[in-house]
Length: 480
Image (cartoon, rainbow, N blue to C red; front, side):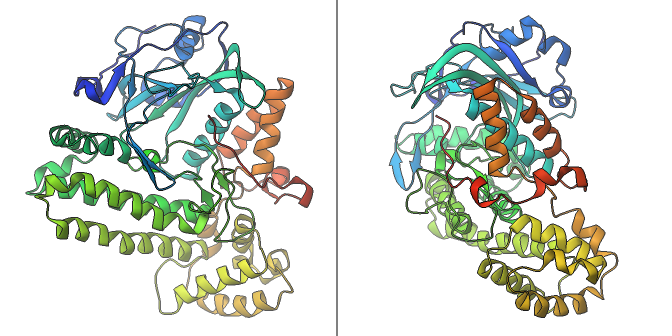
């Protein structure tokens, strides 16, 4: 089969990666192929679905033009610096430039050990592969920048974690896999030439306008800060919790990357944590903006020699984060309650609603979606009202007075408030069916539902309702 690779990253200094082929698997079988994404990449979905294509997606066959590499990077993991991490179970096959002119990485995840495996087996279990497929495609459906899933295949082999599990490989597509940790890897070694070459590459690939100005490296930092501020605001507006915002999971391109113990919040609570390894709540829902800035500060430290060691320049770039995040977040909150512009008192209105929701553990997604109907008619208030109703009733009078200055707010709200998110209990049920019973029907159905998250459909009630007490999933786990 033919894939037109153009592998620019593999032309960078080889200290940034290790050349290594995927390790073949016993009996690859296709679970899911993202045909729409294949078309966007300029690939032939029909060819990918053949035995020859599945061999490529499993790592059993290296297509012509591919240059498989495992990427090197470092990272702060829960605040502790590890100077060498890297792709311990992934191979970047290469890059393709799609019909839209956009360059994207094609990476196999779970494709075998690499020099960065740190005694790991380099493999992935089926559950985490399907989880990343679901959540990354859900994020794309929500309109949030994200890596994408091109395919999932089973390997015909087992992997051992706490127990014996079926193995799988995910084909991931990304704008790039350059992380804050990639810069840290070079900076920790005093490799200023490497930092400069990587920065030049990141500018050319992701921030070409930065090269046109007098201070390209400052413009690079400014660009990454702006994209991360916008990205994290989008996370909060849909109740998403990344779970492991380490610097090696922070993409320079501004995409959401590395879906491990991530989850979507049910009841609104700034302190919500699902990750089984986040014992101190470092990456709790409400902490994500602060951690994003912390990660960006680590990037600024790496770039400081390129900024003539001018700490004031770096600080100025970092100080822009707060304003950019707040503009994106509070602007998004206003749109979520139907306000097209900004007037005095609007932010108090949104914050008062969130405080009431937190006090009564109101469901985040359902509350905002039902408010769409309440914007059209007071008869819908009964479906929204939470707690004893007193707080909501007082708030809704103020809200309706403000809505009187808006045109068709309900329709505008339905465009930004999803009806369905990947609720933890629904995701876990779909994964259990696939892993334990070899039943991929629930996975396929959920994937279809998540592809249209803003659609109203009474038949989808099982996907839109919050979990019952006995259905609640309180912990999510890393996919390694």
